[in-house]
Length: 84
Image 1 (cartoon, helix red, strand yellow):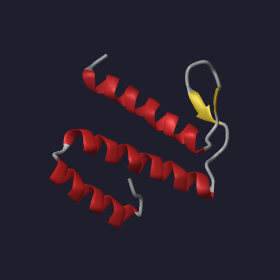
Image 2 (tube, one colour):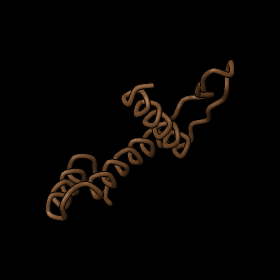
Image 3 (tube, helix red, strand yellow):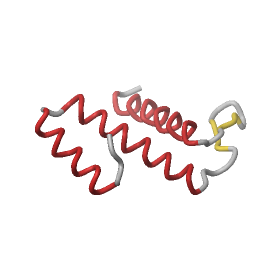
Image 4 (cartoon, one colour):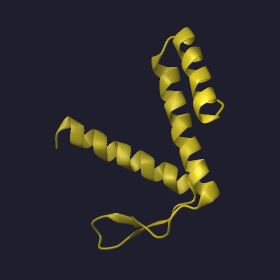
């Protein structure tokens, strides 16, 4: 497995975890992959989006200098309406 494939699997697992936190339910269908049992609805979709934005904020906090992070945080708040 190449490095990119490993990142895709990790990213997919993180997205799946965020979807579950927002209310999605996954089940094994054939032992090979997980499929959503039902779709996210209104406020669950909102929560899922907010969780993704919060993940991005946290990644930026870890990687950016304080001043650059403060500018990005302002942009996130303005653009998405999600606060830290």
